[in-house]
Length: 324
Image (cartoon, rainbow, N blue to C red; front, side, top):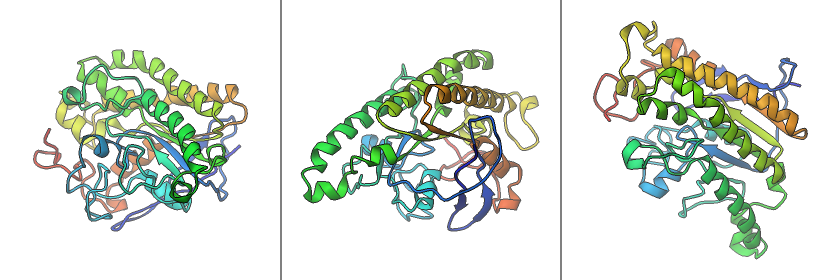
C-alpha cells in the first residue's frame, strides 16, 4: 500500500515546497497520492499540536504566541499555526477546538485533546515542578471516550447542540492523529538519566501508545495518522537546559545524543505500528516521518527562508531566545 496524503506547509511569510512523505507501515514502500476526505479529526498530543488545551486549564499562552497568523494569542505555543492546523486546512476542515476550552469552541468536525507538555506515560511530578502536563495520553483517552458518549446524548437534542457536536457516524469516519512522545524522552533527562536509561523505558512508552490506539479502534476508529518525534537535540530548550559536551554538537548546532534517542524512539515506534497493524486488520495506519522533515528545515535553513533554525520564536533572552 502507499501513502494517502500530500501536505504542503504554508505560512504568512514562507511557502514551503517541502513534502511530508508519510510511509504506511506495510511492506511496500511505493509512494502515491490521492485526495482524502474526512468529516472530522480527533487529535491526541502535546505542544506540537495543542490548539488551546493547556491555555484553557492553566491560562492563555501569552504574546508573542500567535503574533504572525492569528495576530493574538490563540492557545498555541507558536507564533502562528501548527502542523495540525495545516492538516485540517488541507482536508477543508475548520481548525480543531481544544476539548478543554469552553469558550467559542465548535466540535462539529472533531476535537483536540492535546495539551502542551503532555506525555504518553502518566507523569509522577506536578506541572509546577517539571512543566509536564497532568493531562497525559491516558487522560486524553478518557476525555475522548467521555466526549464520544456525551456528545451523542446532547447531539440528539438538536438546536445548538446539533450544530456544535459531531454526528455519530463521524467517529468511525474520522482521521485520528497522534503527535506525542517528545516529552517522555526529555522527562528522563530532567531526572538526570543517561541516554541508555532513557532508551530502556521507550518500549513501555510505546506499549501505552499502542494500547490507546487499540481502544480508539475498538470504538470504531479506522484511520490513524501518527507522527514520529522530531530532532530533540535541535530544540532551543534542550540546548539551553541540559549540560552538553561541546564534542557532541554537530555542525548544525544540534546535540547528537538527544537526536540519537529520538531516532531510537522513532525506529521502535515504526516497529510497534507494524505489530499493531497485524492486530487491527481494518485499520489504515500511517507513520509520518516528522523527524526528517524538521531535520531538513534545520540543515537547509536558508533554502526554506529562515535565518536561524535554533532560535525560539516566542521566547526572550539568551543564546537561543529561551529563558527558563
